[in-house]
Image (cartoon, rainbow, N blue to C red):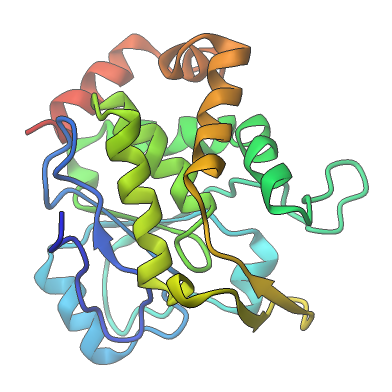
Length: 231
């Protein structure tokens, strides 16, 4: 997986999510958002045969930082991992990084179900899944997909941690301005974080497939996912 990163002009942290478990290369990519995608980057994406972009950000994030297309004709789906509004009084996004990783699987079921249903359709491939920087929401989504394709927790974690390198977080936290104009700090991710997410799923549902079935995913959809993504 040392060659997983792919240089796409204007897109951060772009890499192939395949090559571990039974997930084959060239069908599922992961990245940060496309809001700074350049025309050169669009040509590079076209060369990959991109057909679908799944955006895990909130509708407000999309409004502030819409993905750029530069003539690309791929399908775009907005399937938010988290409640739509960061300031939602009923379901506020945790500020604490560790709390976020147990909050995400609690709220991500509908998003993950929709992601799997799209990936179960062969005409959707290749697919890119992204959030803002491709670290947290994308990290959970890809971890679930890799788990379904038989990847070990160790391999899932190894791929998850590559975002530290892809975002320069291997050198420490990085300040940024969020979609509301608030200054925040992007922190490096650790193995304990994705373990907490997968642990929440297994504690509450037993297995990743059982978690997805509880949110409406069918056996036929899981079978189609395997058929489409397996090497």
